[in-house]
Image (cartoon, rainbow, N blue to C red):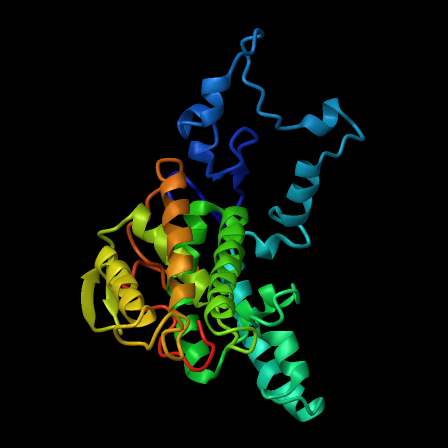
Length: 315
């Protein structure tokens, strides 16, 4: 099942437009019914808009990179689950990594959080920036149960609605792009201010702040509930959190650029990436008017404050 990018209707047999690549229900599958950008570039002298519906018949044996992707990730493909579900894939990866951090490595490998092996696998450190795998693993690793719990709640609520309106490929690029840039921003600032032996970072908060930034641009007045209790517009939550990070991270409350034990600069970097990307795609994607609790659920207010209380090296 997929969701129509035009009306939001859930469709068991969705159609993918070969011009813009978005997914639509039967009612909006024609280019003129979803205001396809490809119509503006239509210069077909034969007077027929080629949808490419059965291109394989006219071109047997032709297998473009796009068609291969469709076969793998499209409806019915072996990797079809990942399309439209990367928020939950990332959520699962976070908890798998958490199990590796605090159960598999300490008890089966004898490598606890203070060991060199543990830090080399999970922590993005200012003295080991060349360990490029930690650019990715540090996003999914966390500093403790509270840390991963807050990030999981934020990703569960905010992730699916943003993925629905960006599409899975752009959402995945946003998650990794914001997460990596946020982590590097934090450790580079540590390297220049403290040195190579300063604290490293773990956590998905930078990536989640990128998601929150996009959602803020698409619908700044969307009502959310801080800690499930206090209603407020999304823009107030976002910029209130940014203001706190600026004050705490740059000296007034957190003791300098490191911001105490919380990677405030990583939060800010992820948010900036999200706001910039949201401004780029606004007008080209739909505007979400509610948060969804689970796939296909009704609109519900989500929690505020991605990240939650941080510990040493957390973001």
